[in-house]
Length: 116
Image (cartoon, rainbow, N blue to C red; front, side, top):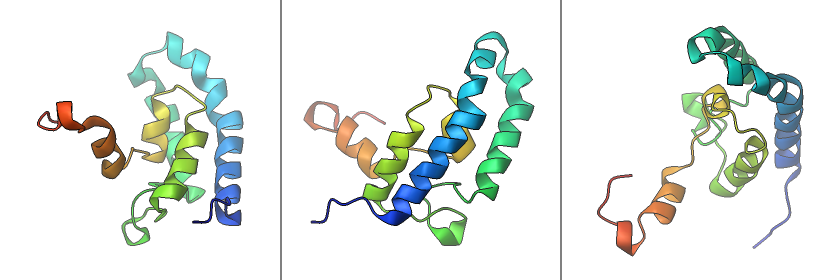
């Protein structure tokens, strides 16, 4: 198994890191003092930017408007996105932990019959 980070993922995570530094992290103080409704126009603007950058829905197939990343590639995206605690990040990039990851984390023997 090759554990080398591909050039493709280096470019993608570089774009994400730059977006976080310039567009998301500076918003963190605002999110502490404003309501979600007040921040919604900003959230929509950031979502639009993410779509234009073609970073939308990393774990969804390309034919459905996503990036079509595999699980390993998605892990690197998740690591980059984890740099900001904002709830906007999952919404801005439509980033969700893939069901396969949720299943392995939350449905071990003691939790197997509990809904996720």
